[in-house]
Picture (cartoon, rainbow, N blue to C red):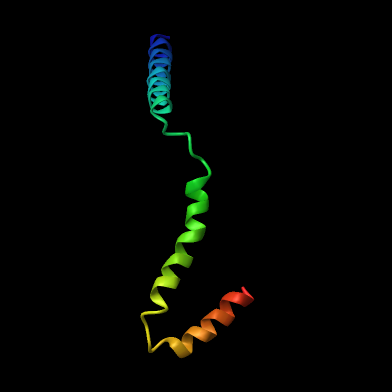
Length: 73
């Protein structure tokens, strides 16, 4: 029966620690911007492709086929 009291004490103290950590980070603004990281990943790949295409002269012929494939997707 003594172990039950010890387990309850440990679980309540662990829950209190997690609550304090959550409150501290919520006040620092950790959880304010939910949408932009998920949307930002959609736009990163297009910016990289645009930067790579003008610099590669050898891939100009292949670049047209890539554009057709991108449009079909």
